[in-house]
Amino acid sequence: STKFKSLTDNAFAKALATGTLQQYLYLQINQQICNAHYMEIVENAWNNYRKNYQDNINPLPQLSLADKIKKITTIIYNNEKK
Image 1 (tube, rainbow, N blue to C red):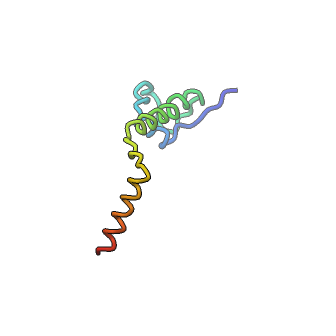
Image 2: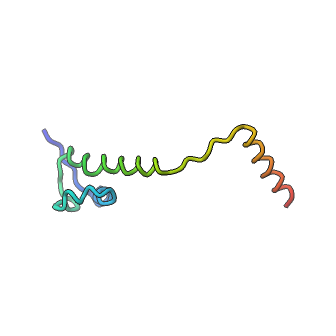
């Protein structure tokens, strides 16, 4: 038996943000679509969007213990001067 899902406002917005709705111009909010297509259009596209977004974020540099101590010492020193 095939499962169906409703294309909610939120799901529609996700698909719109990722550009997958351009391939399915006939879809409308609250329309029932099969689970396989829902996953393809909404969830997989959203996960790819999030992954690409996260891949483009520059992670904070890893500090050595000496650098961490230096930063903490500087912060404490500056707070004590006030």
